[in-house]
Length: 188
Image (cartoon, rainbow, N blue to C red; front, side, top):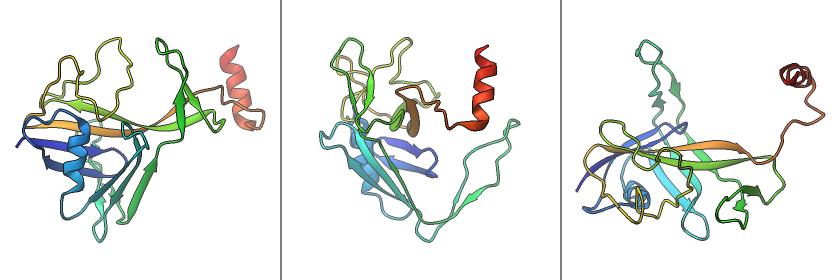
């Protein structure tokens, strides 16, 4: 059973997960992580279609978490995050009907949406699921790097989840007092 590192950025979750031989989807890593005992504890709530994440919950009950970040010189940042429960949700979004050039659309009229994104790295930190020039949105239930040429997880691969904010419409409003001058200066 391969040992895969799972990290959830900003939730201070970093654990080694044993996945079944032949596992080639991020979902299999997440399923194995949910079964781990001890803390931090992970709960995954998928979207209704099952292909994307809706919510990640990490509990650090009774144990604070140290930051894994380092300074520019490589020395650790000595920051401790308090124990408790950390929750991150995707905003409700959809894609335009144009499959050749999908556009993220907020169903709630938001100008920015939060979305979970995952990255898969090998032991040498080579990105395995993103290819130059490709910005494909791939469900975590799909084999990586693609269904055409799947690759099973091996020892020391790493899956990293990040919650990002994506602008889906102009988001500079008339109520942005101090920013109005800065944007005006930047546009001239």
